[in-house]
Length: 128
Image (cartoon, rainbow, N blue to C red; front, side):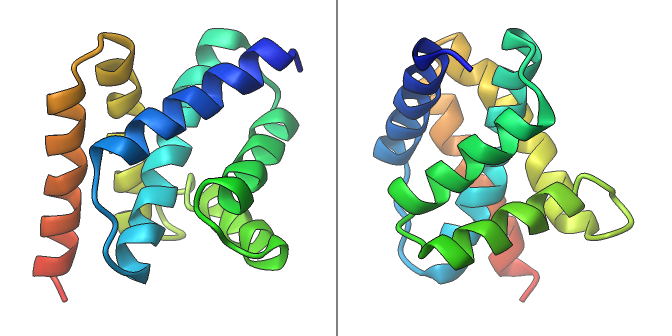
């Protein structure tokens, strides 16, 4: 995987995290699923392997979401498993929203990206 792709992904995640407010652990977990969707948009564009996506998501979990290595690996496996809708329909839906968020990011529609993630948070927290 090229360094330029890693840098592009990290810049995307930094931009996303600068646009949203993460106030608690639930919101951090929602951000992880949403970012995983965004990462899958990048993976499609750049023809990344599943192993590349997994490695990038662990890296994001540790460096950007401040999870321990062990938790970052667990979180990454969870979102990978959630790509099967039957495993976890809510997280699967958030991953798909993140994929749409990738296109908002690509089109530099940052206000819409922020609003989209905030809507995800409101919907999930409204269900609790």
